[in-house]
Image (cartoon, rainbow, N blue to C red; front, side):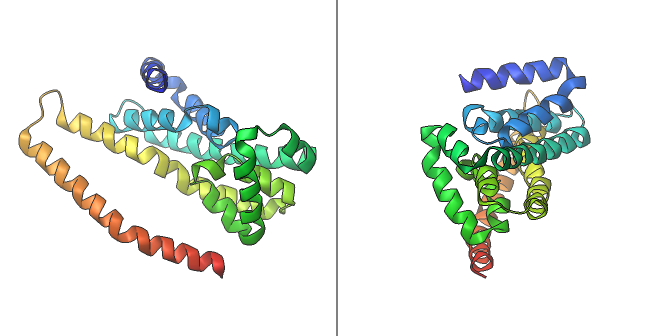
Amino acid sequence: MMEAWTDAFEGWVRSNAGWAAVATFVIAFLESFPVVSILVPSTALLLAIGALIGAELVGPVPLLLACILGGILGDATGYWLARAIGPYAVRRYLPVSCRRIYAWSVVVFRRWGWWAVFVGRFLGPMRAVTPLAAGVVGMRNRMFQSANILSALIWAPVVLLPGTIGGWLARQLGARPDPLTIAAVVAAAALAWLAYQRLRPVAAAMLRIRMRG
């Protein structure tokens, strides 16, 4: 089902490149808007957009800016909504499947504040409810928006990058790829994976130290 949606969307963007930035904005908004991000395959669609960028079928700058803006407004809307309706309404209307992660996010937010909002964008379950938790707890708007904007500036290129690399590689390989080119791509991927495995524990340790501080 999700693959069919992604293929259909990719075909639509290919035929309507002028609307690609608008589509990217809407998808990024839905990906960041509380709860909706769980129901819509936004991540897969953003990967498809990245693949089109890598294949040079659409321009990267408008789509990147649209993704950043959509992410910012999606989180901000969830935060303002929680502030407007209050904690009781949030708990009452929140889907049952989201209540446990919401309660956990409130606890995490009360302990780490700004960093919970920043890091929450990069964690799928937390991304769906962190803006609500920030609004319910009463985080100041300026503090929330600073974490919201800064995390979106990093999140947008990160979420588009894997698809962009895949699209670029597909374009480089062509219809009849050279075996040496394939070997070089595999070697590069292996080196990138090894570097990631080396750096991941270091980054996680630094993040834990920062949050505890």
